[in-house]
Image 1 (cartoon, rainbow, N blue to C red):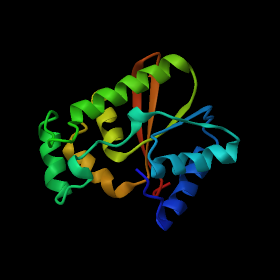
Image 2 (image 1 turned 90 degrees about the horizontal axis):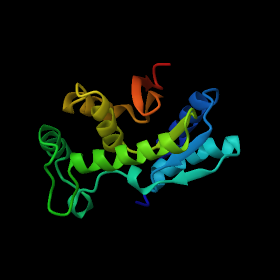
Image 3 (image 1 turned 180 degrees about the vertical axis):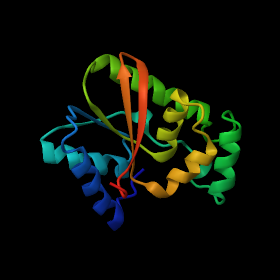
Image 4 (image 1 turned 60 degrees about the vertical axis):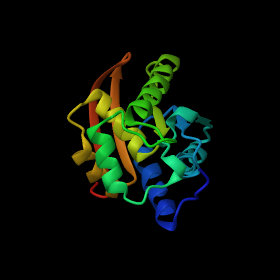
Length: 170
Protein backbone atom coordinates (compact mmCIF):
# COMPACT_ATOMS: atom_id res chain seq x y z
CA UNK A 1 0.00 0.00 0.00
CA UNK A 2 1.16 3.50 -0.70
CA UNK A 3 -0.68 5.60 1.90
CA UNK A 4 1.86 7.95 3.48
CA UNK A 5 2.15 8.75 7.15
CA UNK A 6 -0.25 11.40 8.41
CA UNK A 7 1.08 14.38 10.34
CA UNK A 8 0.27 12.45 13.53
CA UNK A 9 2.14 9.45 12.10
CA UNK A 10 5.20 11.59 11.49
CA UNK A 11 5.14 12.76 15.11
CA UNK A 12 4.51 9.21 16.33
CA UNK A 13 7.52 7.80 14.47
CA UNK A 14 9.68 10.17 16.51
CA UNK A 15 8.12 8.72 19.69
CA UNK A 16 8.87 5.21 18.41
CA UNK A 17 12.46 6.09 17.53
CA UNK A 18 13.09 7.83 20.83
CA UNK A 19 11.73 4.82 22.73
CA UNK A 20 13.86 2.38 20.72
CA UNK A 21 17.03 4.45 20.91
CA UNK A 22 18.56 2.53 23.83
CA UNK A 23 17.01 -0.91 23.18
CA UNK A 24 19.97 -2.41 21.32
CA UNK A 25 18.15 -2.98 18.03
CA UNK A 26 20.53 -4.68 15.59
CA UNK A 27 18.14 -5.69 12.77
CA UNK A 28 15.32 -3.61 11.28
CA UNK A 29 12.59 -5.34 9.29
CA UNK A 30 9.38 -3.99 7.81
CA UNK A 31 6.23 -4.72 5.94
CA UNK A 32 6.56 -3.35 2.41
CA UNK A 33 3.59 -1.03 3.05
CA UNK A 34 4.65 2.60 3.15
CA UNK A 35 3.37 3.59 6.60
CA UNK A 36 5.04 0.70 8.42
CA UNK A 37 8.21 1.10 6.38
CA UNK A 38 8.44 4.86 6.90
CA UNK A 39 7.95 4.46 10.66
CA UNK A 40 10.87 2.06 11.14
CA UNK A 41 13.00 3.63 8.38
CA UNK A 42 13.05 6.84 10.42
CA UNK A 43 14.65 4.90 13.30
CA UNK A 44 16.97 2.98 10.94
CA UNK A 45 18.16 6.19 9.30
CA UNK A 46 18.98 7.70 12.69
CA UNK A 47 21.06 4.60 13.50
CA UNK A 48 22.68 4.21 10.06
CA UNK A 49 20.95 0.87 9.53
CA UNK A 50 19.21 -0.71 6.55
CA UNK A 51 15.58 -1.85 6.53
CA UNK A 52 14.86 -5.38 5.30
CA UNK A 53 11.42 -5.58 3.65
CA UNK A 54 9.56 -8.83 4.21
CA UNK A 55 6.28 -9.18 2.34
CA UNK A 56 4.76 -11.56 4.90
CA UNK A 57 4.58 -8.77 7.49
CA UNK A 58 2.06 -6.79 5.42
CA UNK A 59 -1.45 -6.17 6.74
CA UNK A 60 -4.28 -8.60 6.03
CA UNK A 61 -5.88 -8.40 2.64
CA UNK A 62 -9.50 -7.32 2.80
CA UNK A 63 -11.57 -8.01 -0.32
CA UNK A 64 -11.45 -5.02 -2.68
CA UNK A 65 -9.19 -3.22 -0.21
CA UNK A 66 -11.79 -1.67 2.09
CA UNK A 67 -14.63 -2.66 4.39
CA UNK A 68 -17.44 -0.27 5.37
CA UNK A 69 -18.07 -1.66 8.86
CA UNK A 70 -14.58 -2.43 10.19
CA UNK A 71 -15.86 -3.27 13.69
CA UNK A 72 -18.38 -5.88 12.51
CA UNK A 73 -15.89 -7.36 10.05
CA UNK A 74 -13.15 -7.59 12.68
CA UNK A 75 -15.54 -9.11 15.21
CA UNK A 76 -16.53 -11.76 12.65
CA UNK A 77 -12.89 -12.57 11.86
CA UNK A 78 -11.86 -12.78 15.51
CA UNK A 79 -14.78 -15.08 16.32
CA UNK A 80 -13.91 -17.33 13.36
CA UNK A 81 -10.23 -17.24 12.39
CA UNK A 82 -11.05 -18.93 9.06
CA UNK A 83 -13.62 -16.29 8.00
CA UNK A 84 -12.70 -14.16 4.99
CA UNK A 85 -14.35 -12.36 2.14
CA UNK A 86 -13.90 -13.79 -1.35
CA UNK A 87 -10.70 -11.90 -2.21
CA UNK A 88 -9.49 -11.41 1.34
CA UNK A 89 -7.43 -13.25 3.93
CA UNK A 90 -8.56 -15.01 7.06
CA UNK A 91 -6.82 -14.32 10.35
CA UNK A 92 -5.50 -17.90 10.18
CA UNK A 93 -3.76 -17.03 6.93
CA UNK A 94 -2.40 -13.74 8.28
CA UNK A 95 -1.17 -15.45 11.43
CA UNK A 96 0.45 -18.32 9.52
CA UNK A 97 2.44 -16.10 7.18
CA UNK A 98 3.54 -13.80 10.02
CA UNK A 99 4.64 -16.67 12.27
CA UNK A 100 6.53 -18.31 9.39
CA UNK A 101 8.37 -15.04 8.68
CA UNK A 102 9.06 -14.49 12.38
CA UNK A 103 10.50 -18.00 12.74
CA UNK A 104 12.80 -17.41 9.76
CA UNK A 105 14.03 -14.19 11.38
CA UNK A 106 14.63 -15.88 14.72
CA UNK A 107 16.70 -18.54 12.95
CA UNK A 108 18.63 -16.05 10.82
CA UNK A 109 19.35 -13.63 13.68
CA UNK A 110 19.72 -15.64 16.90
CA UNK A 111 20.31 -13.54 20.03
CA UNK A 112 19.71 -10.32 18.08
CA UNK A 113 17.24 -7.56 18.92
CA UNK A 114 14.96 -7.34 15.89
CA UNK A 115 12.62 -4.44 15.19
CA UNK A 116 9.67 -5.38 12.98
CA UNK A 117 7.43 -2.68 11.51
CA UNK A 118 4.05 -4.19 10.75
CA UNK A 119 0.33 -3.48 11.18
CA UNK A 120 -2.26 -3.76 13.93
CA UNK A 121 -4.09 -6.85 12.75
CA UNK A 122 -0.94 -8.65 11.64
CA UNK A 123 0.78 -7.95 14.96
CA UNK A 124 -2.33 -8.91 16.92
CA UNK A 125 -2.46 -12.33 15.25
CA UNK A 126 1.16 -12.90 16.29
CA UNK A 127 0.33 -11.97 19.88
CA UNK A 128 -2.69 -14.33 19.72
CA UNK A 129 -0.46 -17.16 18.48
CA UNK A 130 1.62 -16.98 21.66
CA UNK A 131 -1.20 -15.89 23.99
CA UNK A 132 -4.68 -17.14 23.12
CA UNK A 133 -6.19 -14.78 25.72
CA UNK A 134 -5.48 -11.99 23.22
CA UNK A 135 -8.87 -11.91 21.51
CA UNK A 136 -11.13 -9.41 19.77
CA UNK A 137 -11.70 -7.37 22.95
CA UNK A 138 -7.98 -6.75 23.35
CA UNK A 139 -7.53 -6.21 19.62
CA UNK A 140 -10.20 -3.50 19.42
CA UNK A 141 -8.61 -1.80 22.43
CA UNK A 142 -5.26 -1.37 20.65
CA UNK A 143 -6.80 0.13 17.50
CA UNK A 144 -6.66 3.56 19.15
CA UNK A 145 -3.21 3.03 20.68
CA UNK A 146 -1.21 3.26 17.47
CA UNK A 147 1.70 3.23 17.33
CA UNK A 148 1.58 0.12 19.45
CA UNK A 149 4.81 -1.58 20.48
CA UNK A 150 4.92 -5.20 21.57
CA UNK A 151 8.15 -6.52 23.03
CA UNK A 152 8.51 -10.27 22.60
CA UNK A 153 11.34 -12.09 24.30
CA UNK A 154 12.42 -15.44 22.86
CA UNK A 155 14.61 -18.27 24.00
CA UNK A 156 15.50 -19.78 20.64
CA UNK A 157 12.08 -20.01 18.95
CA UNK A 158 10.10 -20.16 22.20
CA UNK A 159 8.33 -16.98 23.31
CA UNK A 160 9.10 -16.48 27.00
CA UNK A 161 7.44 -13.09 27.55
CA UNK A 162 5.27 -10.49 25.89
CA UNK A 163 5.13 -6.89 27.07
CA UNK A 164 2.84 -4.20 25.66
CA UNK A 165 4.26 -0.70 25.44
CA UNK A 166 1.95 2.31 25.35
CA UNK A 167 4.15 5.19 24.22
CA UNK A 168 1.60 7.73 25.37
CA UNK A 169 1.82 6.73 29.04
CA UNK A 170 5.62 6.49 29.40
